[in-house]
Image (cartoon, rainbow, N blue to C red; front, side, top):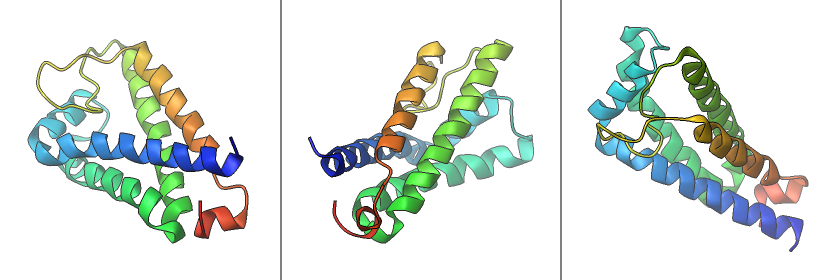
Amino acid sequence: MSRARMALILRWALAAVFFAAALPKIYSPHDFAVAVFRYQMLPYALVNAVALFLPWLELLCAIALVAAPRWREAALTMILGLLIVFTAAIAINLYRGIDTACGCFTVKPGARHMGWWNLGRNALLILAGLGAWPHRRGEVNGRP
């Protein structure tokens, strides 16, 4: 398989993951705000703002990654940055012993609590993002 085709597949996979992660948070902003609060990492005054803004950013990045060639590199940069921040937040809470749901793909009360497997999943997503990175100028603005 060519490098360009692999990058295309990885971009679509990352877009699908971020699209799927954004929707439950958009539909249930209160539940997502509770998930953000339970991480105990943000000042209380910022929890609602982050809970409202973050899912829309995820959705915008997912769409831009596959539908907006001129914004592809920016979307991929943002996705990688978000994954690094999310991974750090999960690692810090696992280290601190905070037992809460991840809030990654579902925000329902009683969702599966985060574990070390979340770090492995995020590491694979980061690798996918790096694999999707354009190496030639034509890959950023044109196809694939």
